[in-house]
Image 1 (cartoon, rainbow, N blue to C red):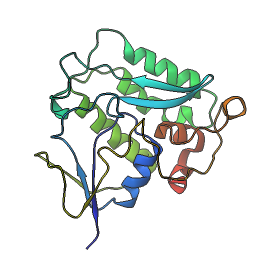
Image 2: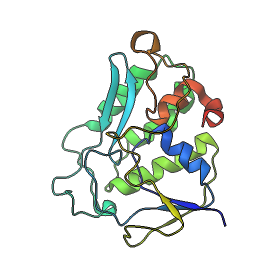
Image 3: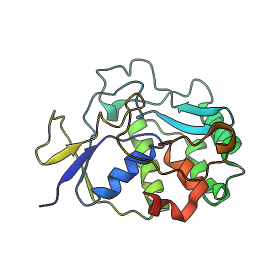
Image 4: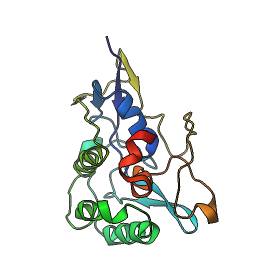
Length: 202
């Protein structure tokens, strides 16, 4: 029997996430009952800016601390982070080969308002999977379990502060000449620079 894997939902997830998703595509569990983890990819993404790695953080409403279930975490709109994120993506990737190809579909996520971070990440994931032409079969956990028998667990291992065990073959990045190649950035870095070839990279 094919082994499955349990994944959290991330904001503009890193390349490693999609590499793993495509590996387990027919047996995926999406975690929706865990407690929200701060300073994780659940509400942050890393992109390649003129000055190096830049983190984009989706603010959440105060009170969304450790003991809030991830599907109950609400997005904060106290400041105009959507405009800031869209402008950052435009500044960093306007000159990339495929930015304009994906821009219109992605910009919806910076115009509409979502109440819950989980719903926002879920719809964004669906769009990116469509871009990559990856079909996955997934179900949801429903209740929190420390371990899922027969499933590999990526809920904590894919993390901004943890070194990925993957080997990332360099591909062209807009500011590579200035900053060098930066591995395992958000999937949008790969998409904007490689377009339809992204799936081959994964």
